[in-house]
Length: 314
Length: 307
Image (tube, rainbow over all chains, first blue to last red; front, side, top):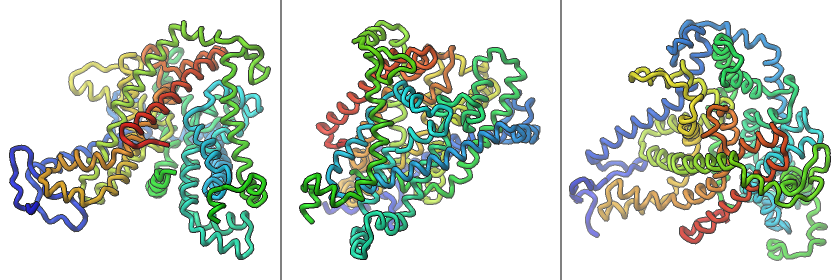
């Protein structure tokens, strides 16, 4: 093949394309077909971003719009009839704050338990010299593909007396096997020299783990904390299932009840109740999503790196 | 040391030498046994009568009584059919989209623009399902944006969430919105690992951009595709329980009711725990069979597999 790229003739619609971009190497001109594609592609991706963002903008606009404007269907991305009355009315509700605080507590406690169990177990699973290691890995991974199902879990949690306690939310979900595998592959790549040096200095396994390994794993630990914290923050079904007392609900269940009340089949609800619901719903949704939306841009890279680690087969 | 690496020493020696390390595993193992394997064993009540307050493993054997019952249950088959349809729609429509989006993102030259689209498209993944359901209700309500667009094109407003005909469309759309962006991550990571020389060679052979994509890029990401496909097939029967549970109502039930929501109603609303467990066990076994078959087929045909 002595053809250099510049001598290839375009034939019909099979236009040879000469410029797959790589940083710093793109000097060959695009074919007209590819230029068109690039414009179409850019437009499509702008639309993808717009469609993804739209519900958030619409939500924010609704949260600060007047009921009449929402009812007329005119509210899109900008508030109409701007007011903060609804926001204030939600913020004045004791139950909302109570449930919001519950979410914070469940998230902190749940994440702490999850981190303790996940990091220690992942450390054991990462040690190639551990006898029975593959057995333990299989023991954990099998639960990704086969689970007890809703009813046996429900019976178990009830029998343990976890109903109406924080434990119903934080304990049954304490280990996420995917996160466990991410941690495991991180520890597998941990430089053994450091651990060996620490062992020579007289540290026990406990000392090595807590004083050498963990302090040097801050980035992956941060990723894991974020994964678990987001999970517990967003969790609603266990609370819905196991809690009867509204004072114990996390804010997601508070929100779920508002949504269900405002948009069910409308039985027993007057039009006005539905409309107030639409307004209050927007504010409650906004306040529930806010911490994650605000934090997200700063922590996004950790999530991405976590997924990359997990994709290492092991 | 080499001996140790293969873990050939006896259990007694291994435990004595690494007992501190094994202590780390105690609590997690207990947790797995209690919260994962005990409920699995609890499935036994599919074959035993369960009495509230009695043993979690039921009271007396009833054989296949509950299995036979759901096989004759019209509502179960309705839910089964809906599960298969929604599962298939998800697999056929939602699964390929991240691949396409990743390929489109890969063609972008502006790093800033690429970062922006990626960052935005990952965001929905981090939203609670309750929020996503809230978005769906807002956008499809009579005063929502979707009906605004319908009216703009001269149509009559539709109460989407009250109509069984619309449920699948809405469900799949919300899945696309929530999962496609995040689904690109692994593909984008794999794309960066494809050898640049392959493109070079293809170009010299006169391959155009489309042909390069077809003959170099797609084979390059095929192992990732297969692994994700197998995982998706394993989830086939579990189709977004929480989301459907939040979105459906008695009006949309004919198309929306899936096995998991049916289990919830039979088991926890009507209190027929053994009967619901029998259905759940059936669902879980199908899931397990699907993931093992998909894995075996994939290993044979494409050489990539989960294990």
